[in-house]
Image 1: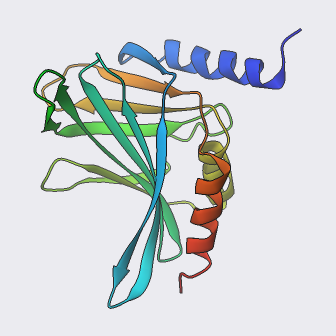
Image 2: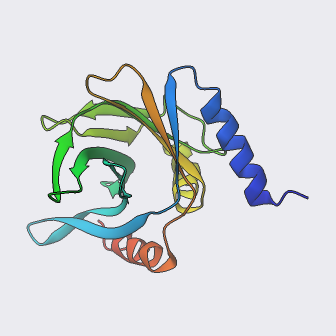
Length: 179
């Protein structure tokens, strides 16, 4: 009998596999989550949870950040390529990307902008979707789709692990300090 978790995995995998632009699906089994905050003049203006996907010997690096700022929520996608022999990394520019989960299938819910450094930032444009978006990120599984610059197709990263409880608590504590 399928558990709810197994059923969600099947549904999300089905969505990923039926995506017409996806050339590759990557199931991520090792994740690292961390917290950060952005300050301005000593005041916290943004709270961040960062997902880092770095798995030797695969040279690809994916960083996905869940952001809360100015009463808004969003994400940022960055990445790179790691040379494991000399332990050096080179940033990759993002051309496009998105976030989805079985309970959050709103590809057009984000205003997307590229930074001059080639990072992609998506800001949630519908306040009514905040709860669904945050639940999709903080409860597994979810997918991050990325089309790297000079690549014809997307890569879909299927994230099975959710942020650990200490990271979730630190994020909530940070959000409570936002004005």
